[in-house]
Image (cartoon, rainbow, N blue to C red; front, side, top):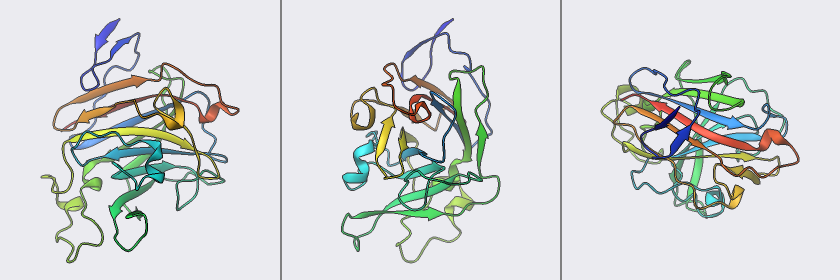
Amino acid sequence: MMMILPGCGRQVTGLGKTSELVPSGQMEVIFGTQAALDTNDFSYIIVFNTQGNDNQPYALGQNSNYLNWSWVIQIGGQNPGFSGGVSAVSAPRLYQIYSDPSVSVGYAPDIKTYPTGALVLRPYTTGGAFTTGFEVQFNRCLLDQPNPLTKPQPSPNPAVDCPPYLFIDPSWAINIFTVDSTGAVVDSLGNNGPSDTEVVFAVNTSAVVSNYLPKTVITPLSNPAAEITGLQVFSTP
């Protein structure tokens, strides 16, 4: 089987999970790993740029003023800082990366609470594009929020009242990383690992999305649970 999936424009051969229906307004992200998750030693983070500039969020964003980072979903690890370590994975953490002139780096992460069922973590279903990993599904309204320092805050909250979306653009760039207990990024979606600045993964959430990007070059790590094998996204307007 050979097909072109919309969005990234990559040619995909032998892809098992080619479509998945998610409810309107929702997105599913599948994070592929080389081995079963190890949340005792690593955290797994999904980074979104929802600003509409199509610039990829890279791992070095943590050291470069969070350039092109808008939102982060974290599985495992510690709070704050995205670092890996002993953690019970009862639910994903959700962070907004926002401009804060009072901090030296200019941007800061703000952890968000969300309604039960609005952001769901599931084990990866075998038989698809990857062997191991995890899935998250969420309502995109969760990400439609203003800078938390904005006064006054809008009422009603757009995360409850949307769509229409007020603070996020339909064009999103997405990247995924694994992070160790020191906070160092050990792998990314790109073939050049944590230092990669070449990978491009973008989706347009105003259309039906079935987007898949395998990692073609996998550098062996001492713990294969930290090795990323690819990313797949399904979304419905």
